Length: 96
Picture 1: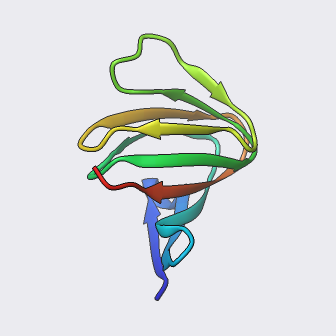
Picture 2: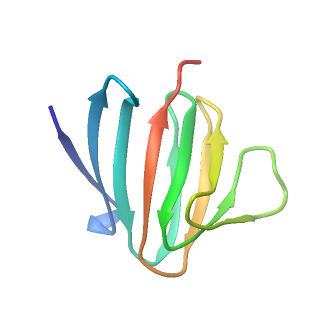
């Protein structure tokens, strides 16, 4: 079953799904902008296209991620994104 979500006045859109190989996940696109997301559980984010500048919980410096690169976000936390061009991602929800 697919679950479609929209955030930040339609600037971020995602489609959630479950699969045997990936587990619970979502794929999405983000327009240019700055966003703050909260997590319910740990997440593994893979940049598919574009690029993301990310400020992870407890970090003082922003990190830049390009297509194919992965970063992890702890559960029950917040992370910040700066998106300079339309970008896409795969988010896998991990077990805490």
